Picture 1: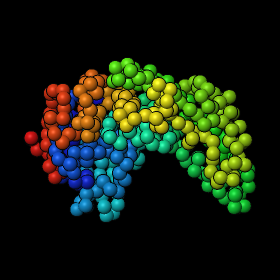
Picture 2: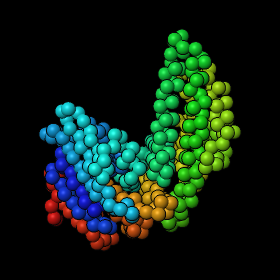
Picture 3: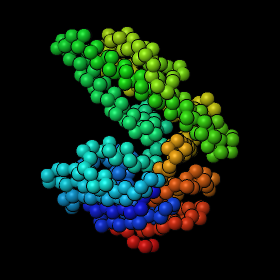
Picture 4: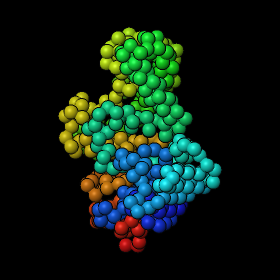
Length: 372
């Protein structure tokens, strides 16, 4: 998968940006706050996912723009596709088309275009709350099977409904039976998500361990494991069984009193975690800053490699302000892993690259592209 044409106007500070990317390597250089990250965000927008920097969609519109429009053509190893994404300020309206056909939701984008994005904020996958690691597992697993995203969204909706019922029951507005109406569908969906996450971690763990060993010269050992709030660390199949659904349902029933007291569902996939350890010590607690950054880096590299291997096509890789702070060994590891993929790299100074790389180089100044 690779982008052949990109246009963006009115997206944050981008003005009339047009780019015909190189099939392999694209360097976007420029000082800070010139729009380099915004260009990568415009590409990421086409995945249908939330900004990898956490920006809200309402902030995509430039301060002086009444609308923004992003267009992209890409080849998915079978055919060329075209995506157009437009948002207007007044009236507030969003229009998305794929090959000229309107799609009502961003989920349509997620099914056709995939990126792997690296940024300094990725260290929060390691440092941050379990929510960040659950989001990482869900996004990565759903990229391999986009239809699974509807189960993730359904679980969130069912959980919200059950939590609302718990709060109303605690106030005497509903009966216990009104709460348990949500248990069966939540158990079915939750069991499916737990199996999905467990399968993904099984697939990615050996590669992460191998990459980390290469990165550290074999001096440290990284391990990954999935911990389910319902199933613990018991092995899970790729697809849920009736027994697993029944076990999930029994867990919800046995904790109903606790849930009523707390006002929310205390057990379920919303409490799962990805456990990361170096030499048997939790990275989140005992890891140095360098170890945490290295762990986050191998998670993303493994994500890109596994997608390429399973889908038989490469994702588009976005490296935002990452390469400049890496030593030659880590830069070379990244290049080796993404050698056959289309890569977009933002840098303040080309000299930050310790390894020569051919391709397209453009300069970003005040939201506009030019030749350096």
